[in-house]
Image (tube, rainbow, N blue to C red; front, side):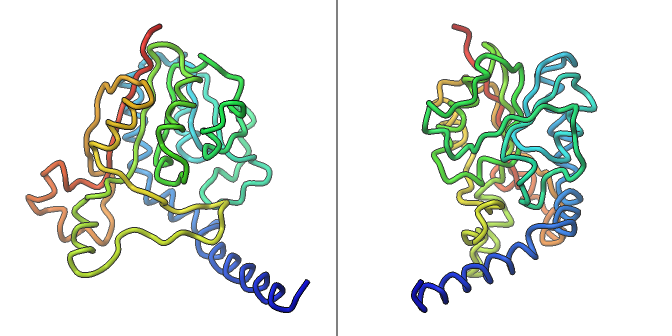
Length: 252
């Protein structure tokens, strides 16, 4: 190995480990779960509204605190994502959940149909919560893959940040960039792309799903928004911090 390559390798490792010290581990996980606690509760409420049967077969994309909350209501809950034994991404549930089966699949592989998990027409509900913004593959591919796992008339509940929220507009107005840079550690990717309401609707339609509902909502009350949440601007849909979409797989 050349000296230049050795220097590059050491620098990559140092940058990655420094980032992981901030974005992964117990402290990061605790802060993440506290910040997203309200979203978790409201996401479950949306699921119960559209799929009220507690015996429905449910898939949560990810394996974390939301998975555990969903399993407190539904009797047959699965999860999907990276291999739990090797996943050190920072926000996953650290305690074992042996009662919840897990499907190992990287959603960035959704453009390769030969890699799709063999669970076709299996789920009544798929929860796709704050994940689509972390994917570098086309979001239509991930929705298409998930729709293959869905029973006819089954639902996909998608939540994701609103790219044109009031917070983002304010940051940009003052010369800042509201979107984070690409991270060093691919096991805990940041936001590659955030979307607008119209884009989310178009994604579902392109994947062959019926758009039952798509709207904006305020999930968060972060410190950066405290002074503006009382503003009449936050009542305007385009300024809210998050998007919710409910897609349905058409009957054959």
